[in-house]
Each structure stands twice: as C-alpha cells, then as structure tokens.
Image 1 (tube, rainbow, N blue to C red):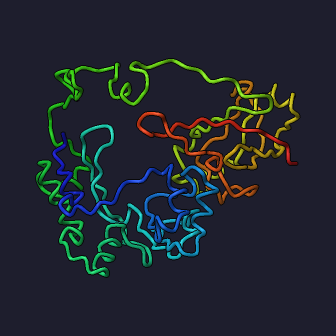
Image 2 (tube, rainbow, N blue to C red):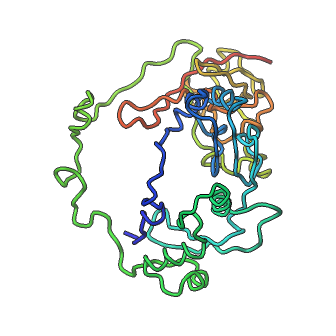
Image 3 (spheres, helix red, strand yellow):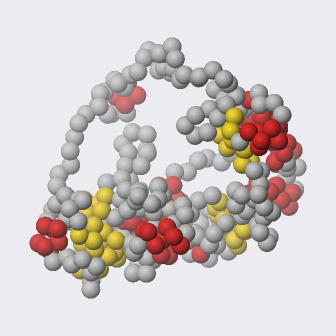
Length: 337
C-alpha cells in the first residue's frame, strides 16, 4: 500500500537468495562442517537471542568455521568472531524509516561522520561486492540513488532534502484502511476459523482449547517475558539499562521459596534437558505457585554466575503448524550457595 517496489529493494532479478534457515535450527546447522564453513552476522546477536545457547556457543567455537561479525558493539557473538567489522550507528548515515504501524516515511538524517573505521552496513557490503568482483549494478548502487528511487516510487516530491525538512510524511492524505471492503485473502474471502490446511496436516479443523499438566514436584513452569526496561537484548549493554535490570535473577513465589528453602539473594541453578543457568533468587507473589520467572534480554556476558542467559534453557521447540516458535519451558531449581 505504500508504493514501495519490493523487488527493486531486494534485487529480486539477481535470484541469488539462499534457502532460509530458522534461528531455531541455527545451532544444529552450524555445528556440522558439511553445512557451513563461514558465518556472516550483522544486525543481530544470536548468541544472546537464539535457542539452544550452549549448543550454539560450541558450534561457533569450531576452528574450521570462518566467522565475521558486523556490529556497533562488542556483542556476545563478536566474542566468537575471526573478524569484527565496526558498523556505523544510525546517527552516522542518511536513511529512510518506514513506519511500522502506519504508512508514514521518515528521514533518518546523519548528524555526524562515522567514528574511526566504522562504516554503514550497506557500504561494507558494497565494498565486499567489489572485492569479490561482483559487478551487478544493484550491488554497488549508492544510498542516495536508492533513497531517491524509493521516494519517487511512493510519490514524495522534493527528495530526501524535502523529507528531512518535514521529518515524517504520509504519502497519501487519505486514510488507508486495510481490508476496507471486508474481503480477505482466503478461499472464501472471509475470515476463516476452520482451516482445511490444518486439517490436511493432521491437525483439528477448528482451534482447540487445551491445558498442560502441572509439572512434578520441585520442577517449575518457567516464564521468560520481556522486562519493563527492554523488549529484547538490544541495548542490554547500555550502562544505565544494565543498572535498572540488575543482576540476572529468577522470581519465585513466597510459598515455593519457603517450601524448598530458597532465600532472597541466594543463588540457584536452574536446569532442564537443554542446559543449566545460575541465577539470583528474587521472592515475590508476582508469580503463582509452581511458576518461576526470569526475564529475557540480559547479555550472557553480563551474567557473572554462568555467562549465559535464559536461552540456554530454550530447546528451540517448533509449533506443530507453521514451525514457528512454541516455547514451553520447565525447569528444576537447586540451591548452589
């Protein structure tokens, strides 16, 4: 609806896209030399954010895996890199920001030159293309050319200079309503609750309510929501945010704490079939009995007890339909000191 030519941005005509790989399969894939001899990572810190964390760390230790990380910070993943290419921050180059929840476009305007030898990701890839003798014009097109083309396609006159003066622009003055005619991209054109696709895959035709059995004694259902300070592990290395997050911890209900002898500020080992994680105990009735909570977002390097985060307990389980993430964690707690 915004008028952006997706094929142009992705250079679909080159048709060189490799097969996609779920992050839930990353550890198993990388540990096998037949699958990968090189790993190039940018805009993500998979050691902190991917499941089977211990297995992934071991895979990245392979002597025959050539690992390059492009990043602004020394992340947990950068610790395993053969080479780290310093990336510029979003304050150091011009770019377009497409509204996530609306149809707007905003100018990301450079306010300073990149520090030291750092470069924007796109410039790093342009230089890599040249070094590899890849001569396709799409691979060396400049930021200015790409920005001008996109703004022209969506009908924003005046180019990036105009957009920078306005900050944010909506290409259309008329509200754009999704499914305004109440016609949906389904076989019937209606919202379909009954799914023949699910049925063909051996699942119920209609959604079914279900509940899980309570875990056995001294095993707990483990919740790992976002904290009030972070949505994910981005910015978890910021000193002020680290201070607000405090030490990596696990919240236990007061009745469970009393029954099993867990003390405030004591340390426990949280274990399941995937891994072990040492955390500091917090006691609160914010969780019910039989449930413990450890928020996601901590960088493994910030956990002085075990240099891991809650993803070391994440088995990377996939949903039975669509193979999306289907996280269901149970863990045992044991006092360590």
